[in-house]
Image (cartoon, rainbow, N blue to C red):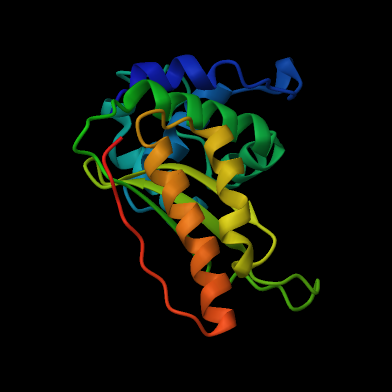
Length: 198
């Protein structure tokens, strides 16, 4: 994991807290949160526990002058940052860390996130499309879609976030195939696709 590069990217996220009240740097809180979540933390208390256990490791990349923030501080600070700005920084970090190889296969897949339906707010389940590097076992791009059946139409948006130059022609053939498959299936026809090397 290229944590020095991560620190460079997250340092551009604006911190809107009142400066005289800040005890923990935003970059430290985000570093802690990202490392903890990658390591399997599932809640704010888990993130705090991870920080207490791995403080020496975290100090190699951040300051942590006041130790690890309490879980409620972590939750409050993380909830105040712009999700779009964080997403942009995270994707840029992934771009810096990821190197594409000819043998790498980028799997594009849509999923409905379990337990994401919010009945009280009348919000449906969250659907996402991910670009997964099989060589690195890493999600290198992800976008939210309106509905599960919108996967094919949302893929170009995923490509705008993550430019997969070498894989683009393979992906576009896949998209065309999916669109044609639906048309032929709905019409009751059969189909056959030839794949060639460009």
